[in-house]
Amino acid sequence: MGEHSKRDAFIREVYQPFYQDVYQFCLYFTNHEEEAKDLTQETFIKALKNIDKFQGRSSTKTWIISIARNTTIDHHRKKKFQRLLPHKWAKEQITSTSSSDYKVENQGDWEVLQKSLVKLKSDYRQVVILRALKDFSVKETAEILGWSESKVRVSYHRALKEMRKTVGLDSEGVVFYEEAE
Image (tube, rainbow, N blue to C red; front, side):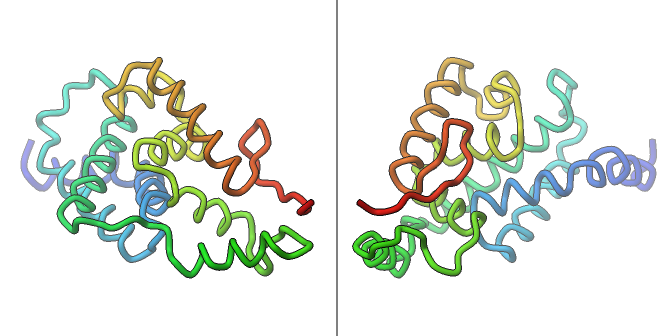
């Protein structure tokens, strides 16, 4: 297969079907559109360079998401990324909690969820993104993260528990708001 036809096959079989999944993973992880776009592009460049090494032991989707995961982790390590929780939001939370209404004004569920996600440690954030937001099975999540299925289950449970403390999630992981007592 020539280089041109190999690239065309990659675009048709990997890039087009999984671009949105990779982009959303990167966006959930970074909470920054431009950074997510850059990481998505970097993911597909790495995948194209390594397509010959893909042996088909996992699905193409789990393979490409694994590359996205490693790309985002490497990116943050290189930048020596500080904690992702903005100080401004932490101050707003303190103010909101002391008011009679716990609702954070003018924030949709997406913003609340994102801010809760970035507060989680990296392992928890990754497992929530894959299980709750991207609907990967426990087995697929374990493959992507290189973890045991048991670690996926425990980490997911603990991550949701942390998120419930921060924002309030029901047992299905849906955002809800509580009235302050």
